[in-house]
Image: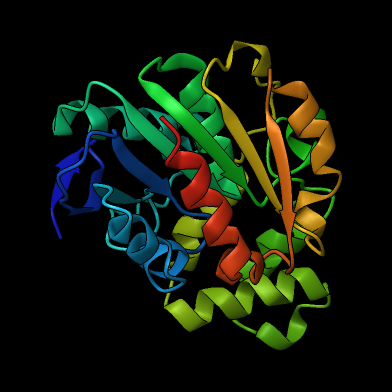
Length: 255
């Protein structure tokens, strides 16, 4: 897997599927604990986009997948990850690109779209009112001490919060670096995002049973001209629904 060096020296991994297309590159940014492989390849999103003739790139965020995994929270945060996205687009020489992010990656994508005018179309999935009200992923559902404990403990049986236990099980299933992920959890974005500054046509895509994407209409209403679509599924399941893939590919395929 190719890599590049971020502005602060962290190694960032990415993968490209080359296609000839008149439409821009599609860049996909995964959620917390996941990777480009687990969030976008395995559910069939990359396959659907390449079948539609799109050139696609996935990025493994710092602390995730095949990217570098420092354990210092100062190296993390969605704003830092947004810098990595723009650096990768610079490297690829793309004059414009379509951007889709899920959960943590949705926050990264919104921060990128606020400052990087090369974003032509934007899809944000797995988030809702928390972005408007808290500035990021909804930590009222999962975050803070419960998540930190779940990531740091050597005794999974000591985790009493069901949501935190689910995230710990996910980490263990993918062989994630718990210390690196705890560093990201400590640096999660919690400041207002200037959503009025998003100029790219935007699709908010949420699972109907996703507590982390509660009240997605609040987010859609805060992004100028954004569309809202809901699909079946909870936070981990919605991205695997055929309707999710159909909505994403269809929206990004518009001229």
